[in-house]
Amino acid sequence: MKTLIFILFIFTGLPAIAQIDSLRPIAVAIHKDFRLDILAKKEAELNAAAAKAKARSAMGYRLQVLSTNDRELAMRTRTQLLQKFPEHKPYMFYQAPYVKLTFGNFVTKQEAELYKKQISRMLGGISIYTLSQRIELKPEKEVKEEID
Figure 1 (cartoon, rainbow, N blue to C red):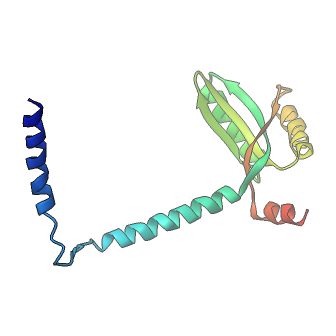
Figure 2: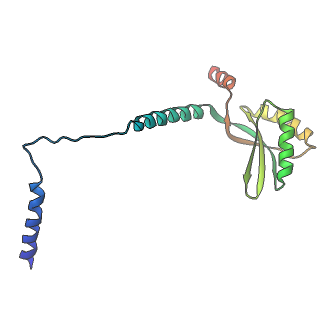
Figure 3: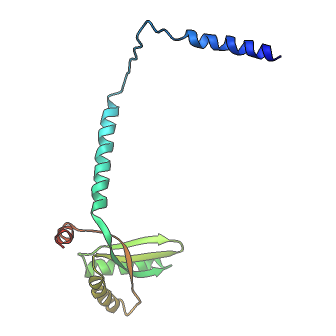
């Protein structure tokens, strides 16, 4: 039985060796679609843009203004913040079961505290929390940070 397996093993290996032709050089023809080059260029541009966008963010502070089940209240509060402070951006997101409203992109905690007092007075003394988060930097804040 062992000799039968040995003979079978030898004869199955011989055809594999016969496939190599060492006298003739191997030539491979590649047919590539021109759109692959365009796709690769676009992907490189997107990667560069993503790296640049990441560079325009840093750790900073935002104010958590509201955490509620009432979406209408969150929308009204967001509208009030946009009207009163158009230079800052409110962020509204859903984290089940609450709608959360955060506000601003503050580099320093002192700047966040100033707005915290103003917003608390504007909304009737509600509790506002200062959160440490990754924030978006404006170009003038980037220049200011590089100087320091």
